[in-house]
Every structure is written in structure tokens, then in C-alpha cells.
Amino acid sequence: MLELQALTRRFDTTTAVDGVSLTVPAGQMLGIIGRSGAGKSTLLRLVNRLVEPSAGRILAEGRDVTALHGWALRAWRRDCAMVFQQFNLVQRLDVLTNVLVGRLAHQHGLRRALVLLTGTFSAAERAMALAALDRFGLAEVALQRAETLSGGQQQRVALCRALMQAPRLILADEPIASLDPMNARAVMEALRQVNRAEGITVLVNLHHLDTAREYCDRILAMQAGRVVFDGRPEALDAARVRDVYGITEAEFAAEAAAAQQRAAVA
Amino acid sequence: MIARGEAVYQGTLRQRRLATLVGLALLLACLLAAAWVSEVRPTTLAEGLPRAGEYFEKLLPTLRWATLLADSETEGSLAAWFYRLDSWAWLLFETANMAALATLMGVAAGLLLAFPAARNLGAGTVAVQLARRGMEAMRTVPEIVFALILVWAFGVGPLAGILAIALHTAGACGKLFAESIENTGLGAWDGVWSAGGSWPQACRFAILPQVAPNLLSYALLRFEINLRSASVIGFVGGGGIGQELYTVIAQNYYEEISAIVLLILLAVASIDLLSERLRHAVIGRLA
Image 1: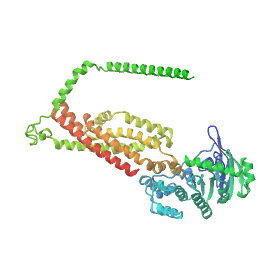
Image 2 (image 1 turned 90 degrees about the horizontal axis):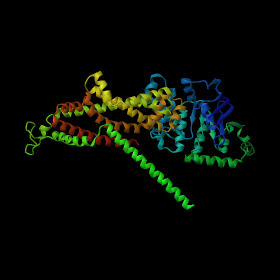
Image 3 (image 1 turned 30 degrees about the horizontal axis):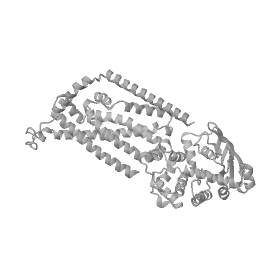
């Protein structure tokens, strides 16, 4: 179980995340929606501790995550894998090694130093990575450089890397915002499958209400850093969207598409 | 309106011309002052130039057509001019060897320093400052000065030269490496970091593969530069062909000076060409 208590993050002039309190039971697939700049991304980065909170606490199974540092912090990051909008793979490295990066935080002592020096992983780790790639139909491209893959393939490689961490939690930050509809579907299906088959809790940021409704058990809507809706997907109907965002669902979708366009160009 | 615009345009043009003229006048004055301070006088130049020509004339070997290809015992032959070619060739090889070793050592040290020195990797203020200032010190002190100190410590010979060039290389390459790292996107870094990777792991797996071709290219370029450095480091006792050159210059063995200089020129040019080809091949294959 993941618990956020009045989690807040202020940047110079803005408050990106403003007192978010939330309880996510284990195994849930939680969709977080909101317009650009609503604080969704910062919220996920706070949970992974890529961003430090200004106030509030994060508890995982009752343990205070916000107080961790050093090795314990890296172990926490390993346990809550991140998937990014821009995939964040090492472009010039082959797909297999990219996936194996997920094992780095599992290595200890001499072997850790050895892998660091030589860049070679153990046969068992390679077998594990290949199995993960094979699961998403990527075994064929294992030795290609990440940069030669399509966006959809890269995102699935990123998901493989996340699974190699053997995480309890996956934080997916706009995982499909840079993908075409078909690849977006494949990635969402994969996330859903991971959530169902392995019981991994998934927190996923999404631009589109429809996607959130289709795949998630629960939807959280954010606006200016605050949670403005939290409930079952069917409760977030057209009237509720207008209530929450002051625009119709069609306008919300158009805005999301425009933001996606901008992201693709950038 | 048009007339007013034209007037303003002419006005700014005049102003700009005036500024340029004043600037040029100032520059000229500075140059003259600098020349006067450093005792660059036209008369001294005119007197000295012929003497330089005289020296070059002395350097020219005495070659005769009839005996050009004769053995080294015969006056006027090429063999006599290069009568110590065997030992000079060995010294040249030693020089190239020095450059290669110094480049390897310097590049390795520079690589280790570049990661903490790169501002975007957040190594902490103390580490960043230490790495940056350390590399600055290494590259601002000329190799010759390092060599002088090291010759005193390790004695005359290639070791002092190698260490001196390696030190300078670490500082110079480390800075370029750090800049190369600073120009890399941090997406992959976030990827490794968010997976629980440590700082060295993130450097190794997220940054190194992305900058490796750039770094290799810098390292090979540095090898070319170090070859030239290694040729002169012998002047202060750092080993290699420079030491021999210094001896023959000091003892006024004019023909030997020209022979060695010619050999160095040939060696540096050919290794330059080779290394440039190698560098481009490597870049082409890695890119």
C-alpha cells in the first residue's frame, strides 16, 4: 500500500503539487489525468524521489520513504520503477543492455564493481532480460541499438527494464503521449497485463480520459497541483468533467491532442 | 518621415564609423606600445634577419651529385648526412611511444575527472570544484615546466617526459570530456537513476556510451598533439628525439640539426596523416 500525506512540491514561483493526500492499495491500476502543468508528472517523480518534496510524506507499507537516503533510497527507486514519456533509454546502447540496467540496483559487492568496470552482466541476468523482451515480442531486436527502434518498441523496452527491477510499483509518466494509437494500445495493454498478472501496482499519467476509463480501476483528476476528483472511472462522466475542468470532454480531448502534438514536435 | 529616417540612419552610420576608427586607432597604439616594450624594433629586425638566414645556410648539408648515393664514409652523400639514422630512428620510435603512453594515461585520468567536473551530473559542489580546479592547474602549466620538475624528481629520461605530457593531457582532455558530457541529454541518466542506479553506475551506463565516440575522437586528436610535444620535451631532459636535437644544437653540429629536424617533420607529418585517417574511420564506424 502506498500512502501520500499532504505531499507538496513548490518550484520558484509555482506550486506544482499542492497538498496531495492519497492511499493506493496494492495491485491497483490508478490513472492520473489532468491538463498540461497540472502536476501529474511532478507527483510521480516525487514518489520515485527523482524530485524532493517541499512538504508532506510518502509511506510505503507504513515505511517513510521521504526519509530514505543512500542505499535505502536506491533500493526504494528499484522497487518503484519508472516509465517515461520519452522512454529515457540509452540510445547508443543495445536493447539488451538497456533492459539489464534494471538489474543494477540488485547487484552487490564485488560483482557490482565488476559489472561497472566491464559492462558485462551474468548469463542468468541476460536470460532474464531476454525472457522479458520475448514476452513483448522484442527478442529479435535484443542486440540492436535502442535508437534504431520505433517509439512503441522503445517504450516496451523501457517497460522490460522496469520489470527487471522486480518492482512492487510502476510509475508511468505519460507513457503513450509520444506514440501513435496502435503503439499506445500495445503499451497500455502491456501495462494492464503486468498489473493483472503480477499484481504490480501501477500509477499512470494520461492525457486522455478515454484511455484512463478503459484501463484503470480508479481515476485521479488533478488541476493546478490539487486532486479535484478521485473515484471509479464510471463516476467521471461528462457532467463531472465539466464540473471539474470547466470545459466539455471534447474540449479536454482536443487540448490533450494539441499538447501531444507539441510534445511530439519538441 | 522618410527624410527623418534617413537622417537617423546617417547619424548612426557616422557614429558607428567613428567608433570603428577610434577602436582601430586604440588597437594600433596598443600594438606599438607592446612592440616598444618587448623591444621589437625595425632596425633590430633588419639586422637580425640576415643572421637567421646565415644560420639556415649553415644547416644545409653539403651534398654532391657524384657521391649522393655513396656510403656514409664518403663526403657529400645522403648516407653521410644521416650517418646516425639507426639511433635517430630508434629515438623517433621512443618519442612516438612516449606520446602513445602519455596519451593513454592522460586520457584515462581525464576521463575519471570529467564526470565529477561536469556540472549537469550533480557530483556535489566540492567534487565539481576540486575536479575543475585540478584540471585547470594541470592544463595551464606547460608540459615543459612539468617536465623540468619531474626530471628533477625522476632523473633525465622518458619517464619524466611521459608523466609531464600525461599530466597536461589529463587537464586538457578532461575539460573537453566534461564539456562533451554537459552537452548530453539527461534522459538516459534519469532512466538509470530512477531504476536505483548509483552515481558511478549512471555515469557508466547512461553517459559513457553516449559520449564515447566524441571522447575517442578527442583522445586521438590529443595523440597527434602529444607527438609534437614529445619531440620537444627532450630539450629539458624528458627523453625522446628532442634530447638528441638539443645536444646537437648546443654543440653546433649543423648538418645533424637539419637531418634530425627533417626526420621529426617527416615522422610527425606521417603519423598525423595516419592518425587523422584512423580518427575519421573510428568516428564513421561509431556514429
